[in-house]
Length: 451
RNA sequence: GCCUCUAUCGUCUAAUGGUUAGGACGCCAGGUUCUCAUCCUGGUAAUCCGGGUUCGAUUCCCGGUGGAGGUGCCA
Image (cartoon, rainbow, N blue to C red; front, side, top):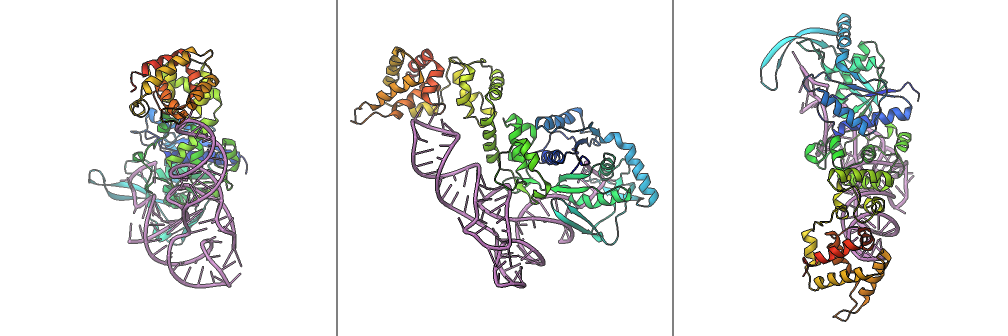
């Protein structure tokens, strides 16, 4: 391939960027970068009511967040209005299009209206064919097509003509878009030809569907790019996951860097059937990406979320650096932060009622907690190794039932007493990170919750 | 209805005219361990149905069925 490849993403800015939509952008971007070509962005803002500055910014934000950088200036379709109408005049003059009075019914009001429109003439015999880079050879009999409106009775150009004229103007060589445009392709090919322009290559990507196989919508969970960001997904994870929906490299690789994806990508490996969006796999992939983040990067994320939650920038008993490794490995989405480690940052522990019930409301726990408080207070040094050795020794002592007490019997109540929850970093690591005074204090105060 | 596509474990997918049909997620079990997470081991589970071509079909062809898209003076 060469630098002659030019592809585009052409969203209409209607509010938020749907996940199925952004995937078209992802595949266009990948195709362009793989080929060393250009990835263009065109905003189809002909719907003046919905195309606000905010809506356009949302599109641009989503693109930037996912790292879909575009080449050349953003093109706004409304700026090409004169070209659209000029193209229509040419089609009219060659007879490829004609004017006619057409009656229509407003789907909303049921009102009938009629006016003069411009229709594009479709062939009356033979067939229209093209080779889709994803779906293979496509064909449509002329008798199954109909002339269609390209200029409304109010004089405004319709999508079909605007889209094609813009693609010609931008020199687009490959049109990669959603499956929902397959039928339009038979129309657009005829317009390209009628305008004397080369017909670009087409690739139609299958739609993303939900667990029921229906079109993926907001009811199925996060549906817009912004929501994935809010829910703590990493852009690289979403990107990787999206690429794997309908495409595979052909070997067993799944977690792939952006560079690897660019190198491996090709349209002919894309599937032609719809793919279901599997949120569980996305969650797994996000966890993979978080685990692989450099500690400094993860630390920055954590800091940001600590600040947002009104918590201090550093843990109470240790450095933030010391806390990062055990927290990072347990984080599946950034939204887990700082909730899953807040007891390191504030003195008041929020006790999970279920955890208290399970681990503290047991006979003997009250005494157990205060005896450990005393013992920890008296230890010559308070390190993970020291507390572990000590607890280990206690666990091997023979209890009233004549059997060793066991680690679990001791560890579980201590963990809940100092953290308020049943899961988290290894207990002895946790104790050291918390610091002796705080541990002792929490053991004493938690004994009031215990039986 | 008509038109354009499409069909491998529950999900995302790989592969091939001859394989024990592979991987990943999920799920289950075991190991490690103080929990959770990680990590390691093992397991579960698929070629939609019916014809045809062929020595042999999951693979090629036809039909059926299921699914998606389209069928606007929306994009």
